Length: 251
Image 1 (cartoon, rainbow, N blue to C red):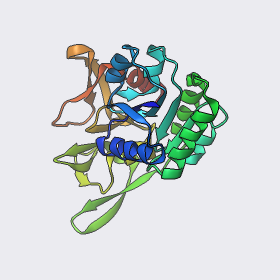
Image 2 (image 1 turned 180 degrees about the vertical axis):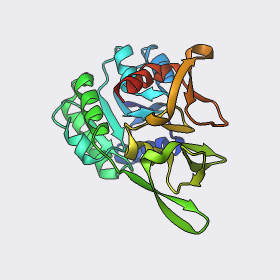
Image 3 (image 1 turned 90 degrees about the vertical axis):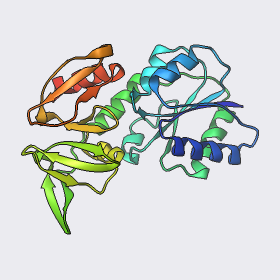
Image 4 (image 1 turned 180 degrees about the horizontal axis):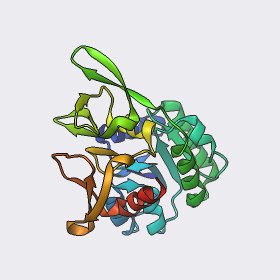
């Protein structure tokens, strides 16, 4: 069985690779791809693939974009950090999923399901996208704990302009220009606070209320201008441009 893994976190991808090989020793991991762009290029080569394990949220966009642009026959097992509430919304469709962090039993069940079906099937991408969107638009937490010295301070999300990564530390930057350390990973913040916040790139998760406008930039990227002074450029890659503009128009 030839398997393709699409995952932008190398440690996670390697963990999945090890687990697949444990539960199905004859499986061959053909390639591990970290982005929408690279996955599209690879799948256009028509390399023989029996099964695809794909993360949903990649650094340069949603993996649904891959399968909308490339015609292929391999069934897909989506990998996601979304909770069971979101997953149940599309559980009836002909597509399997596994929750992160991966468990040996869920990976085994996904492969067993493929072997039972043995019938290549395209997922209902529109239905899945709607389900994920519905989950993202569910009201989320309204505050977050920030650190200042030895103090833990509850801060309303409405006061935060963006979250950003600097020197491998996650910070919250307020609408008044103050910075606070956040003891959470950016992926966790994105999952908790979307759709009010948009993941412009790996380093920046921006709040809609802080966006002044956006302008065209080099190589079809967008430069996001905030209503508050911020020292770094915030760029949205060309793959995420449409999603960003849709987000701006709906919020």
